[in-house]
Image (cartoon, rainbow over the protein chains, first blue to last red):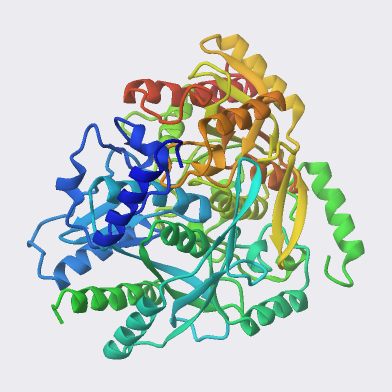
Length: 313
Length: 313
């Protein structure tokens, strides 16, 4: 906290909390006249954030830009917000780092692959929502993952995001020193999403822990990367230990997502489909059309949740 | 190494080394009939890798897909390989995870932002080069970075990639255990690139250490993220310590890039332009056209190097 500001800051925090505004854990931002969100190619000096984004209540994020465009088309249709022939423009058209689309109260943003990539996006998204004076926002990651002990195509709603040693924490280096943050997600939101899956009853969904790794190959005990120094037996033992610790799927973004949303007072959930069962293999060689249908499952589940929340079911 | 294979493996390793082939540190791959490079949407069962990629001698990689497309257009022109009106197709058109372009012996591939994103790409790139039986390949990252104590627009050729505590190493979690790898880069290649910069004499270039971080905001001591718990004084002290340790720029991919190329016996270099001087600020608010010109500098330098190597200067 900046020196000399505790009373003002405390009053603002109380006000933020009452209105469910976004909580910015950074006293330095108050002193900036303008804020350039470089990786979105947006800035408070060039765009009117409250007008553009003030009505946003749901932000859905996922790795692939084309998947996030497909989601906005889908949710706009579902919410009755779709104009025939209208193509949702990419709000971040000035950059190819991320893509962003909007339909009414829903924002859909891509985040690329891995913790660093989603962290950059979240820093700028959280500031965007703050500058836009958004309130009561829910952020949901809809992604893909490798499953453990589940039939491919199953959907996992994350109870806790855990690290590669199965601990529910996110370690980050700040000024060269290790800082450990909690990766708790909103339990009630997870249960509400599970209820939505039961209502649509189209695919298997479980609530389980999600392991978040820094690498797709060696970091997830795959045998098919360019580098591998362990045996198949060691791989399977590690994945079984993960299963015993409650891990049902593995992906690469949930821990920093949970940690940053929690620090910013944002209700958050992670809903990922599993593309394969890692106890049975490493390669993703399922036919393209099957993978496309799998990837629509988190979209359907979260689409149903948003419709229900807005009284449109 | 797989049991029972030491003699065969040793003979192969010797042969690889003689021909400067790509060294795959993974005995399991020999047993796979087909290899699906999922994030490239390519596979040995569907594409003929030696025909498609066998002639590749230089691979240039960078974060942004549009920048890597611009690079292939530029280098094709420089090498006299450009057909008027011809638009280089994206070889990875079946996915939006990465983009890949080719012009004669040069491959240009995007890698997104951060260590996990470039690591996935490198696993699949190294396997691609191996399957294609490429020999004597040089891989160069051409990217953007934040500078320390340099005028914006300066180019840094990396001597050593260092971590957030300034150590020349890359820590990776494998089966939940910490593995430390060397981040040495090819010293001769760095000197040859420096010589190229002297020859074109268009911008300031230095050889220095590059700090590779897992985050753009807190991980690089910025004051303008959604979360920040340190003071400006602490930030400046950290950056000055980095400078004293020989760090001249900060980015998010060099350490795993150096480590994976070294393990695979690939000659590698990192050439990044600095978009700002971090001792003077955090926000990237330089005009768009200036940033575009800065981003062309590593392309020009590496383009000159490739031309010289191919006897076209």
